[in-house]
Image (cartoon, rainbow, N blue to C red):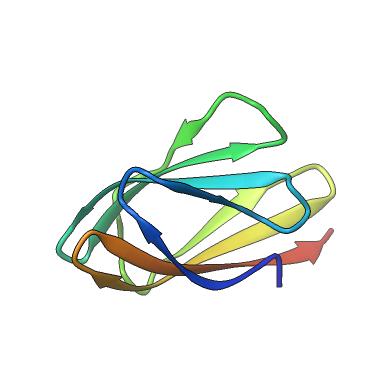
Length: 86
């Protein structure tokens, strides 16, 4: 587990334990979430509008990160990040 389930408020970010992936919650509207992800200090990537229950896949050269959107509580999203070596 790169990041155990945690609540992230709209406008804030969390970073995985290895420091490689940052997830910024840009907006939360009902069960829809817009995220910006940054891998290895590269340019942030805006993800497609996602829904609670979705799993986003972020590819690094040596790993794959999976961002799981667990639930929304107002402007807070509960998410976790898993990783798998390639």
